[in-house]
Image (spheres, one colour):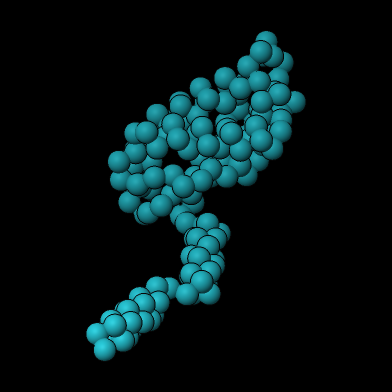
Length: 144
């Protein structure tokens, strides 16, 4: 009789445990929803701050290769706008140094431009305190 009662308790506990564990379909649906929300956040474009045109000599060109670049900075909140306006000379200086350190070969490919975007974003974010640059968008990129 005790054995039968013990088996009954074990079966009941096992069923309760199975009820508490998430089902694989629920886990997959949850992951899919999380990925969908993340993609929506990635597609959302926040506040954009345009910068004045950059005209720089590309590295290693002895002044023969120029790049004319316009860009906009996407920021994660409105508070950083004022900070960027105050720091615009410093931001432009950093970006000019980065741009002029690149060769034509480094900026003429999609991967090169992606790397450049990341470098600009990361370097400017180092001294921002009120917010962050999420993305850098090139609105014009001409070189000769």
